[in-house]
Length: 250
Image (cartoon, rainbow, N blue to C red; front, side):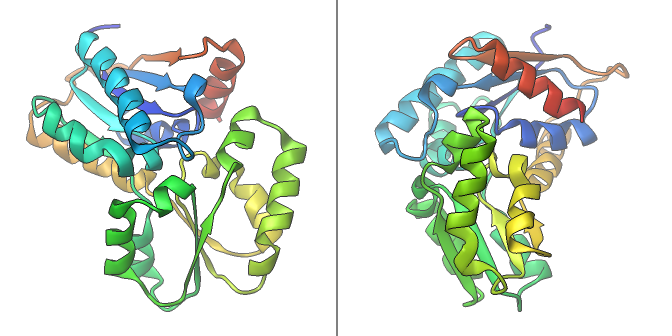
């Protein structure tokens, strides 16, 4: 792995949903993906703890001479992005956020459900976004524990959770904002419960923004070869590594 990589991190493997979108438009870049599964989920941690975890990961990326960093975790973005940018102004830090603006732009008149972690929904950053684009037809759902059971890959628990917690929204919502990068991993399961809804997630927009930043900074790789991907998991889980690469391939 050369020292020209883009560092991407999440509290687990959910950020693979972001990396997959990035690779679609930046296939020749090299990537280091850091899955902090030993501290998963971030959504129920204190702000100071989340910042501490994120700061440690950024330091590791800097040690590896990454040229840009992507925060592929909505909770980490909401709680740490601004402070990390101030601390490390020498490197572009691109942060995911729930795709509520997309609802405003493309489906403003439709009833919307925002699914996100407690940490994201309670954050100041999210409230600024929500207040700015509120269509007054929006439900906020704090999906406590959902990212964790997705990380565990427990199909039975996921199905039970969704059936119990989404039943009150059946027939009421047309849009679903997937406000945690783990949730696109179970998009089909959510659709099975809610029916024919339109999904919105922030990954495609983030990928485009990353490309714009790299272009402006003259940091795009000049290689025409497909880039490499290095996977690091803080709990050294081979199973997480296997799931990560399986998801990227399909």
